[in-house]
Length: 396
Ligand code: ADP
Ligand code: MG
Image 1: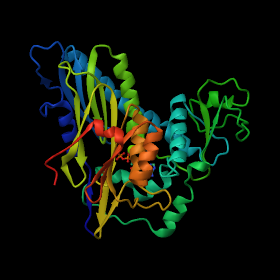
Image 2 (image 1 turned 45 degrees about the vertical axis):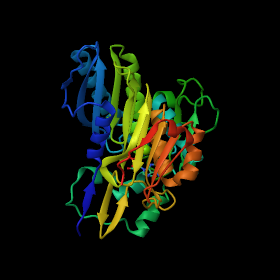
Image 3 (image 1 turned 180 degrees about the horizontal axis):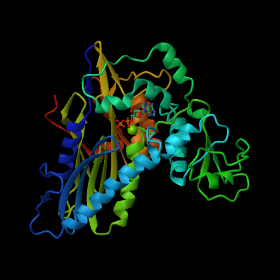
C-alpha cells in the first residue's frame, strides 16, 4: 500500500513572508530598515511539532535575539510541562493517567482555565469540538502523520476498535470541580493523586475550601484521554502575547506557529500587517490577504494541513466526535480572526466541522470573524471579516 503524508510547512512559510513584507531571511538574519529607529529580525525553529517563525521588531539585535530565545524556551516548556499527552513530564499526561481513579486530578490554574474554555466550546459547538477525543486520535496515530514521510504502512482503525475508543470520549463526562463553586465531586480522602502531582496539595484541600483560587479538580472517567491538539497553538499564542507585553524593548512582532499567527504592536513605518490565507487547493498560494493593525490572532484549520492517503482515500486530522472518522464537510479550510489565541484555534477546528452557517453563528457568539473556503472554491465569510479580507485576484 502506497502512502503519502503531508504537512503544510511550505504554506506556513509563505504566510509568514506575506505577513512580514520582507524577504525570506534565515534565523537571526537582519532585515535592514535604514533611517528607522527599530529594525526587524527573523528566527525560525521547530517547537510543539510545527515550524515556528518569529519576526521581531526591537531596538537592537541583542534584544530581538534574547526575546526569540525566551519565546522558543517558553514553547518547549509549555509542551513538556503542560500540554503534551506523550511526555510523562506534562500535566496533561498526568491528568490522563488519573482517568478512572475516582480521586480526580488537581489542575494548575492555567490548565483549569484552558479545560473550562474547552468545555464551554464543546457545549456551544454542540459537541463538534471535543478535547476528550484522545483515545480516538491515538488510534488514528495522527501525530505520526506530521513527522513521517511516505514509508509507513497505514490502515484506518477497525470498526470495533473505533467504537471502543469512542465510548471513552465525550466532554459531558469530563467533570471540572472549581474550588469556589461548592459543586461536590467524589469524596477526597487521601492525597493519592498520581505521584509527582505538584497541584495535589491544593486540590486535596478542595472540601476544606482553603486551596488556591482559580484551580479546579478534574475527574476523567476510565479510559478517557485528553487531546489538546486543537487548542495547543492557541494556548501558546496567549503565552507569547504575555511575553511580548512584558518585553518593553520589543515594539512589534509577528509569530507564526503552524496554522496560527499572532500579530503584535505596529511596524515602525506605521504600515499594517498582511497575513495571507493559504489556498487549500494550492497550498503554495493564497486565497487572499488579511490587512490588520496591532494585536490579532489568526488561526486556520483545514483538511490539507495534515492527512494521509491510503488506497485512494484521503483521511484528514479533524475528526467528527460523533463518528470518530475524519469530518465530512463541504469546507476545505476555515480561518478565524479574533484577539484571543486559544479561542481562535479552538473555533477554527469547530467551525470546520460545523460548516459556514452554524460556524459563523458560533464564531459570532465569541465576537470572532470567520472565513470559509468551500469545497467548490467559493469563499464565505462573516460580515465583519469583509473589512479585513481582500481576495487574491489571481485565484483560479
Ligand atoms: P492543527 O493543530 O493541525 O493546526 P487543528 O487546530 O484543527 O489543526 O487541530 C487538529 C487536532 O486537534 C488534531 O490533530 C487532533 O489532535 C485534535 N482534534 C481532531 N478533531 C478534533 C475535534 N473534533 N475536537 C477537538 N480536537 C480535535
Ligand atoms: Mg484548532
